[in-house]
Image (cartoon, rainbow, N blue to C red; front, side, top):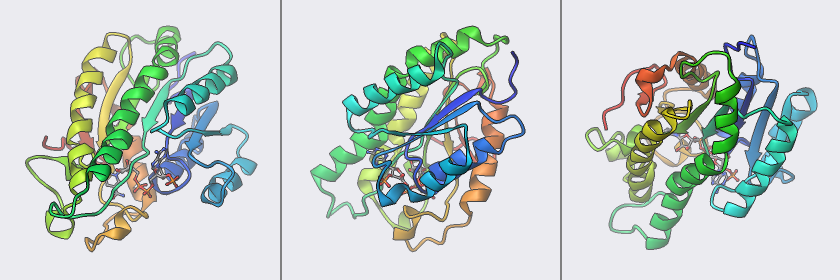
Length: 262
Ligand code: NDP
């Protein structure tokens, strides 16, 4: 069966901010996924209340526990997703979970550097590896052979704050550990390039998307006034995802489809 949108999707860090809005908007697509897996660290805690309320209204939504820094939880979530999909592949993986620990270069701590790297870079690497066989399965059974988000795709939520040439918002917050990881998504960008090259051969499209500077808990720590609401940002992100082709494998685009300088 041909799908103009992915038949299934998994989003990390889906209990608030951009991840939650992405889940909401995926479920309201003209042709919504049959299953959307919204993953978060504490599915039963107050942090996931909005997500729980959404799940009460949305029969296609499943909430799963997944901490991107915990390989065991990633593996357990993969087993649950595999069972839910009963033989079908996972079409779309969105590595959205991320952390920003504010600090200047002088105050930066080794522990923040490690945690930022583990969450923002190692997490997306492991997710791609562990969910790789389900993504390959989706790619192999899709009726069209061109790369697309509807066939199989990994999207990494990057940040222009990690751009080496632009250093977006430097005067509003140095956030060294974020900038160096993804947050400093400089490292995440290289991972996206490596995934783009490697996974394209397996029918999986991989790209990075900068969602813009958006009003969420993460951006509230900075004095830089966010320009976009989560609704506006995710509307743009979904439009960009839907238009991705093999030309964009490994690319880093913003929510309007413009190439973000490395
Ligand atoms: P928020 O801080 O609002 O939300 C971050 C999400 O990531 C939360 O759901 C959080 O869960 C989750 N998370 C953090 N650590 C982990 C972990 N170890 N395992 C699983 N989930 C985790 O951020 P935004 O919604 O603003 O950002 C989403 C993504 O977009 C991030 O990757 C960010 O870097 C990127 N981005 C955001 C921009 C913005 O302007 N807002 C700009 C550019 C990029 P919990 O509730 O448990 O903490």
